[in-house]
Length: 170
Image 1 (cartoon, rainbow, N blue to C red):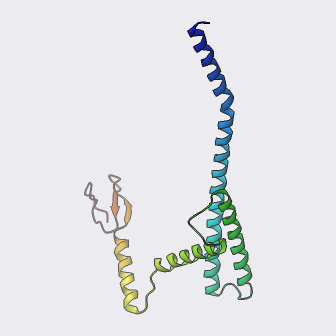
Image 2: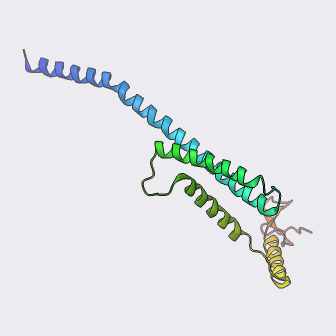
Image 3: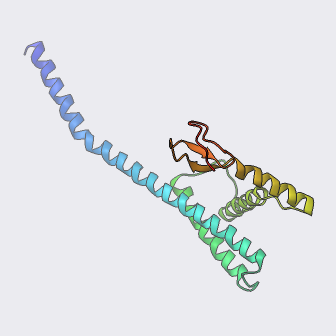
């Protein structure tokens, strides 16, 4: 046999091998995509459970939920969250966290409560309340009042004339 014929036969064997191996790579790729979708869905469900826990705690603190029902509802949500975290750990194990699933849900819920508590400052006296009102009014004055009727450019509430064309806004 000639050297060219041997190279041609080897090339055909390599191409056939690649062709036969291709389905195995796409199946593995599809499995990873399906797994990533499942992980994404589980993370979304985990976030919903954490939000539900935060709302439950908030409603209990406001007195909307009776004291007899609160522990049962909270335990059910914690169990649901723990189950979701266990499924997440099976799909994508978290090696850095040594906490059990319920403790991780508790930690995330507490972190959400801390964020909510710091986002809204409470006024202790009338002076604090007055300063908050004046700051709110300053914010309101710098907001858009719409658009100029002549040129269509945006104008602020505090503008007496359009900054683009000079038309009176009164």
